[in-house]
Image (spheres, rainbow, N blue to C red):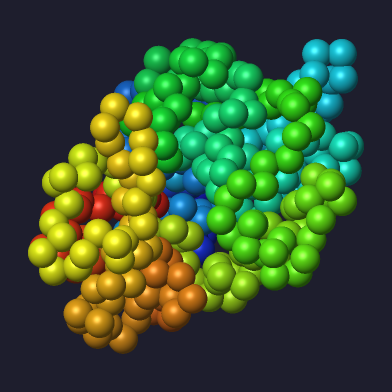
Length: 333
């Protein structure tokens, strides 16, 4: 284990960010070495993967920890695939599709690593990763102990999990591989694509659905390697429908999904679309022209600029709709 000083924090927003200390963990034993190194030091820690869901500061006064576990092991007898946390998510999805494993195709082309997937319970086009996970293997940086959490213990909710506010570092995940082969085609954008291109649902395979998802994403979402961004910046809001302010914009202009217990989920992208002309101009950060949930940078934006711009969106949405938006990427203090 080698501790490096003043190391760059790679992030998809291209913020010029440096960590005081940096370490890569290449084996389970090195977690124990790291614990011994840190236990008597008052050091903040930041676990990083590919940095696609981070808004880091210009200087992080702590230690950035990068797990480096790249194994993929299929066990047909147990209907499980064990995957190292640093494997690229889309590469893993493609590996499953090549082995005719269904369930992962709707999550194609999501940026980031496998280890980040359960933390924010990534989801897209009608699927959530929590539906695919059996167990998560991790190390507790606070106690120096290894733990394995089953699906229930992960406490998955919409874009959230037990891991977000814990001291656990994920190094491996067991995914279930014997899912129902029935394809998930109900999402609106998938239906629109199939209608536009006259796709027969009976002709579809998981591989073809993955291709369709990739085409939809490429047409609506910016590639972070080309246009700096951290993906969807806001979560859809769950609330009581009667609490939405409809005095400025009528409810029929919003996208609202009915949920259980009298709640609804309000589409954040539509809210932002309706107030985007009220947003202050910023030279370094703006809304992506094809998707209102995406904040894009020109590679010169600082963390404070991005957060300030996001907060101006939150305020306008609240003032107009009485809806509180929650930021999805991790704002690193």
